[in-house]
Image 1 (cartoon, rainbow, N blue to C red):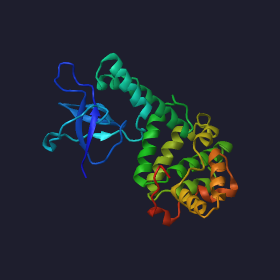
Image 2: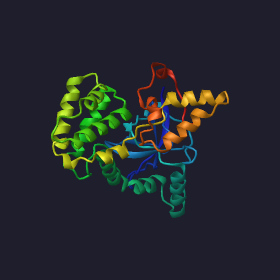
Image 3: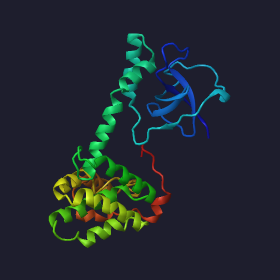
Image 4: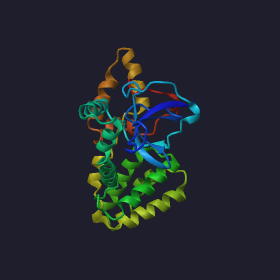
Length: 280
């Protein structure tokens, strides 16, 4: 299904274009979403905007509307308060919305990649300036995506494996910890290749890896759909026990909470068919 989007862009000063342009998208993207869009012969950053707020009127000619190049995955849409601030600023200084929005986002282009690199390095147990942080992050994310590995379980089991290896650097990694990590992958050869890369660039230089840091940034527990669904179903019968227990565990998701180990495992098969909205 095709959806029509209003997108703020920073158009050239000499152009006869406004700063709010129409694009089409296969997905309905909420206002505030950062997108890449074609503009003339180049591609530029844009922000999906509410057409009514941008003062867009008139009919759309589908034959003249180009498709967005893509949304910036992994980045939350900019908040409604941020959008309101930009609208006020543009009106106050009598500038176009696109000019103000893209100028405000300019520092984001460098700050976001730097912050992402630092946070992903921490998940790998590395300092942000570790020489292999970026390459290891890229190879790890590519492997997780291609193998469709459970994200939370991978990072937690990796942390535990590193912890065991760091505790006894002169002995082979604890087999149970390594097997638990390896079992998340179907393509064992691909995992072994990645494991060797990670070991060579981090674990062999054991002082460069901080397992305590890893265990404090890679949670054991997250609110999985099947847990929420089960808690909701019980609450609807008047039993709030699981709701309270979930609240307690998720308040400190990096702690072990051994009584609730089952909540940190793979979702049951029946969970593949459930859908829970963010408003649930």
